[in-house]
Image (tube, rainbow, N blue to C red; front, top):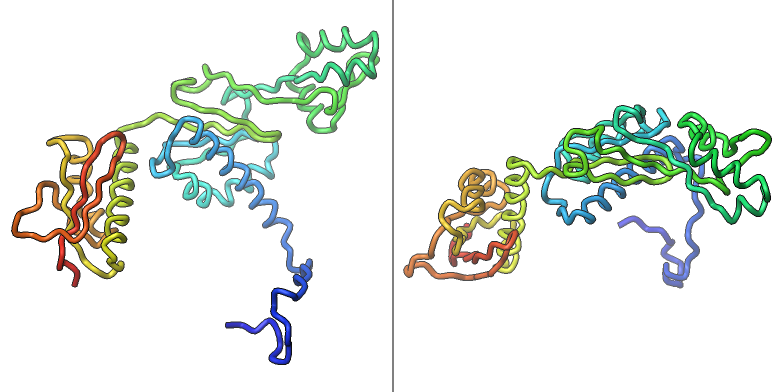
Length: 290
């Protein structure tokens, strides 16, 4: 253990002042990249929660649309961390709004606009609702101000929000969930394909087995035999276990048997559990550890 106080200090470390930051070691580029990564991860989590998609179930793709090439480069740099944290197979970072149906839309703060423009508010509002272009809204984002005739608006009076045209992506709203913050649009493909579902179910099964082993007070090095009891024949879960049996065994150090426990075997731990509305029992056999 590293000593942070000398042997002669009488007071507890809890009474010591927090150390000052050594700013020469702060890497602004790293902090910027991590901030970009966190913003993407946070939105993907929101999208998963919105559709009740547990993180154990992998998804096919996430698309990040942003106007800043620097932001996109930062996302690409930390792409592997984003994929791992979000449990997504692939990530596309793009600045092509048109390709992905992303549009900028003015969000008018009528009270603030009227307070300054007075009688000119109507003409400016009409222009923003019917004539303003995507380039003009991008300019408003870039410099915080947009000139309209003899008047101007600021981002305090007119904020810019992102909208999404689902017709631009295959599957539309049925397969994509979209969320934006003040700089990015995140599109998450939520289509539940068979291979992704099976991978997610395998993770769920591994989780339940690990919980049963923990209840049985086994360590990672203790081999065990666990019976899974109560599954219907040829059910999705039974098929997943059959297909992934070796992978499950390698990750849990447990031999998995689907079926009832013989009367000759003693059960040291039994747990009832549920995965996607399917209930079953896990039976850990006694005297199986090595």
